Image 1 (cartoon, rainbow, N blue to C red):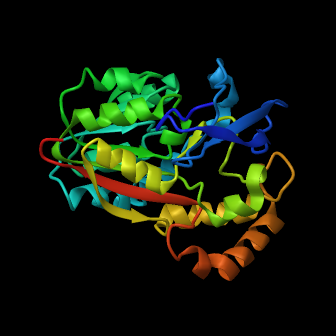
Image 2 (cartoon, rainbow, N blue to C red):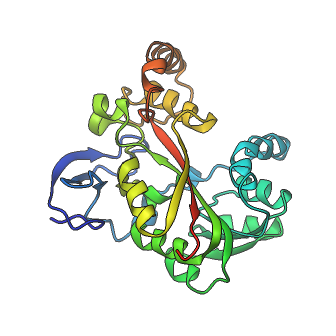
Length: 293
């Protein structure tokens, strides 16, 4: 087995079940590159859509929508502090909460989403939505973009490296790419392994170490300008990892009160250690396209 990113030799890493949602009893084998340490699922299910149950994109009640949009302000600021509003491509916007926040900040949002119902909701909100499972193909047809975002999406993509190449090609010089993704260098992953809630087999197809993403981006002409595992969403996902990774399946079942108590305690005990370096459950990285890139 060779790495789809760097071509390095890879070896079997772990076998995981769908512990989070128990859609299937199948087991899924992940491999890890000996060079860049990318972890991926070589045998992507042909019917990947069936592993996303109907409640995967939960509806947001109208009275909760404004608060959800406001909570995206820090992510919008990652872009606005570096570029003026223009065309923004979001891959995998789901219900479109960030897309709405970006639109209010003046961005012309183009959403690339594989879920047809999510696309209809985005269109009703006045945004352009393209229903596709191959965003790299659609990106090649778009006009140059000022910004692009993937908020916990790159790990779901069957061809993440092709999508990153297409995004880099689509960005204007000086344009911004921001993404967040689970962190395979996380302390939690080392402890829980196949039980880690953010492995999320088989929906998460590729877990990318920060160093591998940084190096790939640099090769594509994208310069790293910010990286953190301690932003608001990162801290929430860190707590979720401590709450749910030790539970019996389905780990994401609702109303497990004692899990919240355990998760809060572990977060307090280990939070300072995890905050040193990029050891949290997820990281966010921001890149700027260099002139001539």
